[in-house]
Length: 534
Image (tube, rainbow, N blue to C red; front, side, top):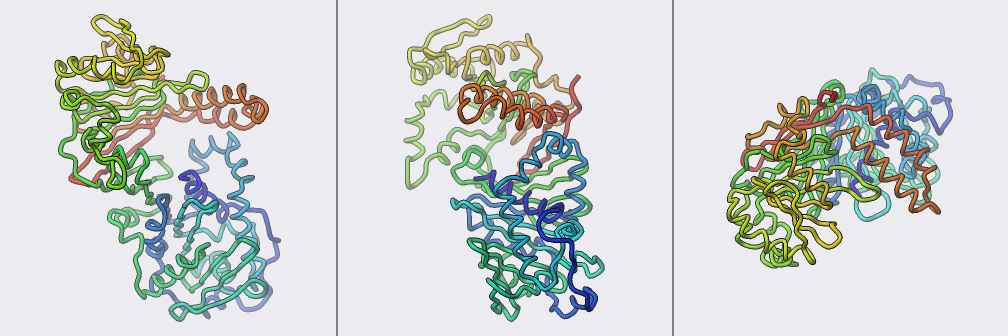
C-alpha cells in the first residue's frame, strides 16, 4: 500500500539519522585510521546517490517512490524543527512509529550489519553517518515487506560516514556470502527471513533488501550501463536543485488509483523545501488535455471546508476512457453503467471540484461539483439524471429558485445551480454549497492568501486546499465515533491516548494551498503554507 512506501522511506532515513538503539557504544578495534582503511576500497566512477538508484525501482511495482537529499541528516533535523515536525513529536506520532513492525525490520537490518562487520559502527553514531547526500528507493508490491535500495555518498573527511562505509565493506562470518558483480564484491547477509546486500566503495555505499536492485546500483556506480531514475523525465531537473535541506522525490501512481484515473498521471516529481514547507510538483500526463476550464469553484465551497480540490481538465469522455480498458468495460459501457445522459455530458465544462465539508459521527460529508457551460441543456437533462441516480427521488426546495432531489435516505442529493451540477452525501452539505454560491455564506474565496494561490478565472489544471486544523478535528471525530462503536477492540480510551494528542498538535498548523498549471502534457506548480486564519 502507498502508506507502506511512505513509511519505509521515513523509517530508513529516521533509522540511520536518529536511531540510538541496538548495538553497543564500542567502536572498531584499534588499528589504522578509518580514512587509511577507506583508501583500500576501489572508487566508484559515479557516486551521486540519485544517479545510482536503478530505474527498476519505479518499474517493478505499481507503488514505488524515490527520495534524494543533499544532506539526509540535516534535512531530517530541520524537519523536526518545522511546525509539522514539532506537531508529529508533540502528538507522539514518531514515538508510535518507533514501535511499528516497519521500524523493527529497519533496526534489525542495522543490527545485522553491525554484528557481522569487522568494523562495527555504534548505533548512536548513525546520526553523523547520514550527513551529506543520500537517496532511497522503495518498491511496494503485494508482499508484506517493501524492498528498498539505499545509496549514501561517502565523504572521506567525515569520520562516521567513512566508518559506515567500512562497516559495510568488512562483513564476514555466519550467514555472509560474497560474490563478484562487474568485478566488485557484493556481500549478502542473511539473518532468518531477512536478507541484505551491501557494496562499499571509497566514495559511495549501497545497501538493498533486493539482490537485483543492489547489483543494478553497483553497475551504475561502475558506469557499466543500466538505467537510473535520473533518466525519468523531470526528476534529474529536480535533483539538480538539491542543496541545503531540500528533498527531491519521485512517486509512482497506481494505474487504477484515483489520481491516475482522474488526472491521467502515472508519476509525480516532487521538490520539498523543508525549511519553508513549500512543495513543488511536476508530472507528465498520458495525453495533453484539449481544454483547461477557467477556475470558478471557490465561490461555491463553504469557507469551513476541510479539504477542497478542483480539476480544470475533468473531461468526462477522457475520464470514461481511462475508467474503461481493453480487458474490461469500454468507455461506452462505463457511460451506460454510470447512467450519464448524453445531453448532460455535452452541457458540462471540463471543470469539476470535490470538497470534504466535515465529518458527522463516522460519516464523511462529501460535495461534488461539475461545471456547466449550457445551463438550459443541464436543466433539461437534470430530471433524467435524478431519476436514474436516485431511488424514489424526492424534491426539496433549498433556496429561492433552487430545488434538490434526494434519495430515500438523503444519502445522495443533487441540485442544479447556475454554474454547477452539485451532488452531496447529505442535504445540509448541498444546501450549504448552494447558499455559498448565492453569496449567503463565506466561501473559500474568503480564505486569506488562497485567492492569490488559486485565482478565480485562471485556467488551472489542479487547485487544492486543506484546512489542517479542520482536518484534525474531523479525524478525531471519526476515530472517537469508531471507538464508541467498536469498544471491544478499539475504544475511546485508545483514541485519547494515541490519536487525540496528534490531532491537538495538528490544530496549531496553518492551512495549505496551491495548484498546478499544464503545458502540453507537462504539469507543474507548488503548494505552500497559507496565513493562519483569524
